Every structure is written in structure tokens, then in C-alpha cells.
Length: 452
Image (tube, rainbow, N blue to C red; front, top):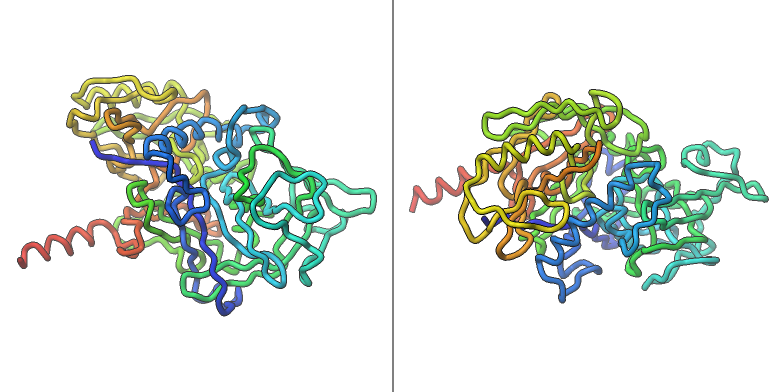
């Protein structure tokens, strides 16, 4: 069994070249480079970590991240939990202000507000780089409580002088408080021309603390709420973005996150399912109808969010796919009945593990979303947690459902927030293949060998 998996943390690498206006970006689309968190290119790379340490840490964070999706758990303390995991598995290197000021921030698909630590700061967590100084930016603008921009950000209040203040907190007790403002944001494009976006609503953090990593300065919200980066790019990218998540075995390579016309997912093997609007609007809700193991179709009847529609969240920052206890039990039973190998104990939370030194066949597993059947590969369904143990990448949680990033590896996943769809296409995500679909690549290789 050779499926190696991981934390999907990436860095959006930004390099300043000639600028591309957002109008031009709308016409042509653009892409930013995705770099795996554990790549040597990442500022979070730790050469002392083993592959299996990284896998174990990622699996633990999947359970911690569930707190982000449950409002009743906002004030729950999770001791020794890294906010990078709790907030998401990405970093983003962007530039704010005029002149442009580079920052590294956590890219979080489970939150909306873009915020960074600002100078002066009454309480700031340590960070390696300098703090953003809004007085040095000619395009920085604060908002009063009476503005529509203040209303677009959840959890705002008025200061004594009438300025709009935000307050956000996270599942491990980390938090940020500060002023709501706008400034120019610069994103690099893989074409070599940075995309400049004016008047982006952001938070200027003056009181921030918790388990933030010193290599970061804040959070880039990529959720579905009004103040997220995706929503603020809005019609300028026609509401479209997509990503392709690399397997951990290719962590040294890079992939892309695409916007606008570059984000369209179509062609052989592409399938689409509706996005369902639910509260909170931050999260991306899909409708799961069933999961098949071989020919055994297991119907999903749970309503973790109260309705039949929108019964599972798709999240690129959660490693495992998490399912309600009873449904998971039925799924595990179906999978284990088709695997002929010795069962062994795995990490806490992973119920189905096998001796990886024994060769065994992984059954075909298909996830049936509304209108879209997504057939998973073995690298999506089993992960090596040690040299001798391979575990099922689905896990039970009480009355909750998240479609995690291991299930999304080597798929081009596209979001259309205007048509309200999510699309999946089997792909090879490393840049060298330019996200061509797998069947086309196999045909090229087959023809090559037939000509030898």
C-alpha cells in the first residue's frame, strides 16, 4: 500500500513585477502558485520532521478544526493547538498598501475577514517580519460605524470616536481585535504580472493573541461571506476560483490556484454539484446523497445542519473526511468487508487501519453528490501513518460532516459562486502536466510505449 498523504498547507508565492489591473484579470483570468506547506520552499518547512510526523499532525488537526464550524465552540480552549491548523492549511504571501507591503498570512477557507497585525499594536503575537504600518500607505482608509463596509463585516462595533471595530475569535481561543479599513491588495499571477485590487476591506489588528505562528501576520479569509477575498474579487473574476491539491509525495512541486476564466473546470471527466446557501454563509455546503463501496451504495440520510440539502461542508483546510457516527460505521463495515489484510491499531481517531507491509487491494469508493459522482483513487482513501500502518482517511464525529482535502487530492476543484456550483475533475495536479485529465495522460503514455 503506497498512498502517502498529508497536511495540505500551501504558500501562495508572490513576486512583484509589472502590474495587471483587475479589469484585465477579469478578461484573461489569472493564477497564483500553490506551494505545499512541507515543501522546502515554504517558510514553515521543518527539515527535522519526518513524513509520518507531518501526517500524524495533520490528522490531529482535522478534529481540532471541527470547532471552527461550530459557533457554540468558539470559546472552547484547545491546549497546544496551532492556529495554522485550526484556521486552515494554507499560507498566502500577498502585498497590502501603497507602496506594496509584503505579508504572510493564513489562507482560511473557513473564515471571511482579511486581517493583519498593524503598527502600533497594544498586544501583538510575535512575528518574524515587520508589522504593517497603515500610516505609510497612501491608499489606507478607515471606516466609520455608519458605512456599508462596516456592515459587511460580522461582529463589528463602534469605538468612542465612531470608527468601525472588528472582533474575531477562533476555536482554540486565539483572537484578533482592531479597526475595519480598506487598502490596495496585490496578488501575483503566474503569468508574471501582479494583479492589483483597490479598496479591499480588511482588518487592521491592534490586539491579537493566541497560538499563531511567528511566520504569519494574520488571516486571509477565503470563505463565502461578504468580506472574504473571494467575495470582494466577485464579478471581477466572474465569481470563479479553483485549486488542485498535490499529494504529499509531490510536496516539492508546485500547483496553482486559479481565478476567473482560468478557473473554469470542464472537459472529459468533469462533474458538477450545486452549492447550497446556508447559515453561516462563510462555509461551502454541498449535498451528499450516498457513498458506494464497490456496488454497495450506502445512502446518506443524516441532517447535521438541519436539512436534506447542504448536508456536508467541503473544506480544503481539513485533512480527513469526517462523517456522522452511524453512517461512518456502516461505511467502515463495507470497506473492511472487502479488504483481506491484518487489521492493526492506528492513531487516535482513525478506526480502520491495516498492516501496510501486506499487499491488499483497496475497493472502489465513489462519493455521490447531488448530480455528481466522484470516484476516488486509493491515495484519496488510505494514508500511510507509519512505515507499517495504512489507515482509512474517513473518520467519525458526532452529528457533523466535512469533505476533507485528502479526498480532493489530484482533483481540479472549481467553485462558481455566481452559478452556485462546485465541479470536480480527475487531474494530475503538478504543474508539469498542466492539470490535464488522467485519461489523456494515460493515453499519451500508452501510445509512447506502443511506438517503442
